[in-house]
Image (cartoon, rainbow, N blue to C red; front, side):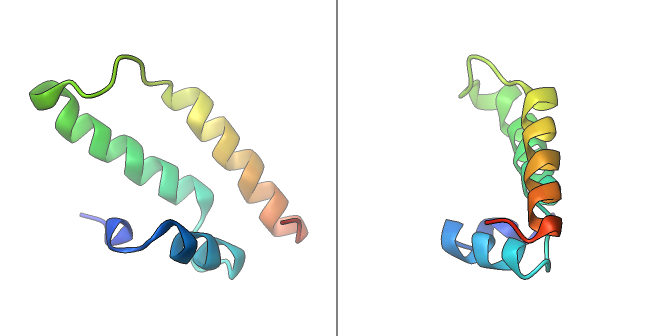
Length: 68
């Protein structure tokens, strides 16, 4: 399992800015964790993985361009 949950949001943002991790990796990790807990606890009414990944790809492109 990923080590991403051990990081704060600020740490993840810093890792993304430094290109040590990808926004797509972060979102995919979150989606994987949702899959693990959804059937047991049903914490989410709606999950839109395609939309989340599309936004992550857009963020990744921005990082690669040097945008904030």
